[in-house]
Length: 237
Image 1 (cartoon, rainbow, N blue to C red):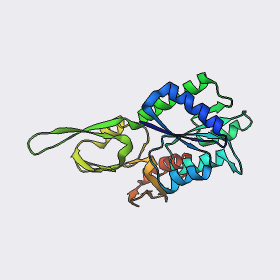
Image 2 (image 1 turned 180 degrees about the vertical axis):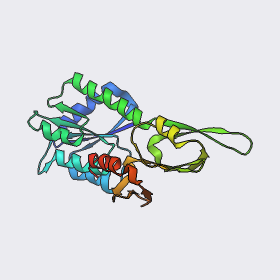
Image 3 (image 1 turned 180 degrees about the horizontal axis):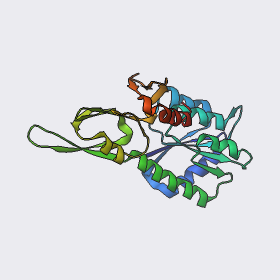
Image 4 (image 1 turned 45 degrees about the vertical axis):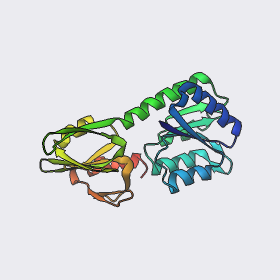
């Protein structure tokens, strides 16, 4: 299931876009509509609704600027995709200053909505792809598959790998370099012994990454500090 939010003060815009998306995707997508941007921010930021994959957002939200709202969302949820809806391209430079995924013009043209949705689904699929690991059992080895979005960080301890996920910790024998090569985007190698999921990072103090929720501190090696600093800066953390 793909989870999408639409934020617009105009209910007709939201209904029109929802109808087009449902015709394109059928039942494989869940859409939540927000006519109040404060409700959107409350659900995604204060209630920590981590299910939402993307937000279709009008650049004009009354007293609020949709681009500013999107910027705040991206700061807190770096991997969320933002698709702007605008009645023109007069703010195009501002829109793409926050790593915008796509921009649609109002009134909507079905071919462009179709293009945006197809690219969005592919992006979400890549983010969610599972990573398979072989773990030792008492009598035989077994294969486990972990959705990469559930991984918080991966730690190397001598010959052992500890995958710290939201639903538990998995330990097995593997090289961290091999995991890094197949795990996909969304992770940063901050230390010889650590791979960290970027969306789980709350703050960076120059020497360490502080993770969300658990406040776990992950060291950043001196040789990787500039690389990590650049990545974090691009994420606006």
